Image (cartoon, rainbow, N blue to C red; front, side, top):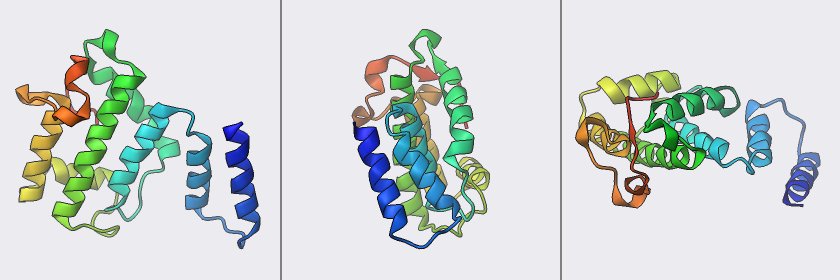
Length: 165
């Protein structure tokens, strides 16, 4: 029922504006239609957290299946590598990206691509990158770090084998 309601709203709203081939319209429609899939929604939130600082952002339609597979492949123990646990990791990473974006005072022209954004986070020497790395290690329980209490990750008894991105 909700699917049909959302679809109707999107198509009614579409009829009220000029036609456009903008990729963002396709992304929005796909995002609305995929809301029933929580893992894809979490991945989309993660991609959007990076998009705030990227000139040409990855399309979540094109990259989420690969990101989800890579992330779930890094979760240990492997038998706990579920969608629910992966969602917690995506949400933790999205949250620290938003904090990083504020610290970096970045905008959509700060990085050329998502890969540039991630490379600078991992290799940069500013306080923003150093703080981001500590927070990233905490989310993933990397380097013996402990996840933030509000992330829900402590209760999962999981860690990441390595950086999935």
